[in-house]
Image 1 (spheres, rainbow, N blue to C red):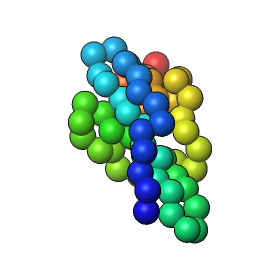
Image 2: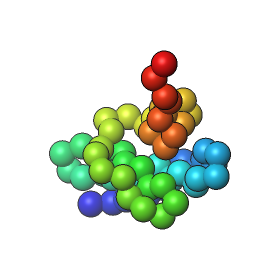
Image 3: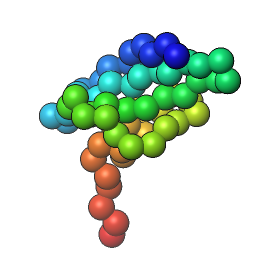
Image 4: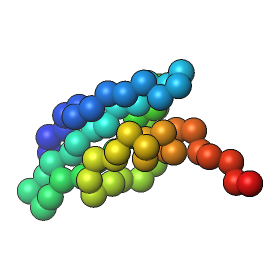
Length: 61
């Protein structure tokens, strides 16, 4: 398994890092926000809008 940082973004006051994990059977991405890994994996790197929504969810209404 190989992991590498593919992107870093500042979303408001939060630092968001996108990590790519590569194994023999494929690759996926996960987020680290302010040094804390988020649950879940992504098949493709998120867009800036997706990062913003993941870190600061929009309020309904």
